[in-house]
Image 1 (cartoon, rainbow, N blue to C red):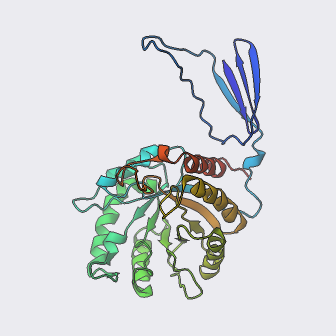
Image 2: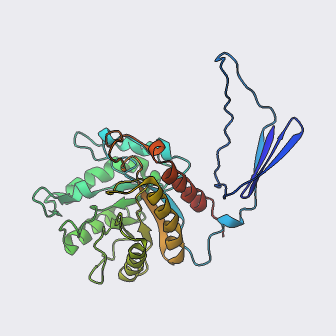
Image 3: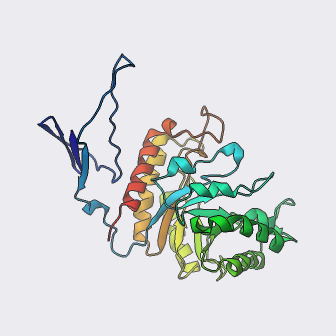
Length: 325
């Protein structure tokens, strides 16, 4: 048995019999070939000999001229022990994932063993900022605390794609000077590793991004896509020369939001990203962080609850990871 997968058709040949199926939609670059069976006898097995799978016509995966889009992954792929470690789940469909290894009881650098080379963005906000009083301020022992995290990460440094500052720092009351200080500490220790900052919804003409920040992104869930497009353009202007990241929701998480609505939004994000000259990546929020009413408790993955948005996420990953010039 062998199958030839193209973007518009699937040709299947079994024991010399050929069947060509015309498809009504594009096949993802990383389509899965399912060799399961339906049988009532659990003792019987199926076998396949001389199985070959090929792909033709990748023109639809060619990156548009002027587009910098090359990263796709998940925000909070590993947040804390209760939320679970989802890095094994996203292997093969991501190349940049946000992870936290600074748990309250201890550091867990072994988490990074599941990261491909330069594929994990390590959160350092716990080391640098104290947010107990409401407004986040640089921790009095920020330099020492960063030194501890830096040492924990060192054995896995080849797996680190970037270090991530406090999440939405200016939206949470952090000062420009404190954000710059934390970025400088990272840069001074690991000068070859990018420093990433997520500006949250606070993206306007007053936004200042420290020169020490190499990558900058924003999220604003549930807002109209025209507004997302406008903010992406604003962020490019306010952070000249820096790669920009967009953080879409990957599953329903807003009042009244449905699976179909999220799927449509996810189809828009690559269009926006490819139209902006410095948007380098999409970092998806969920699906395990996108649980809604009636779903399992937060922290449990629920992609099967959201098949349309799940399909849209797979297509985004296929397009970005399979893109060629």
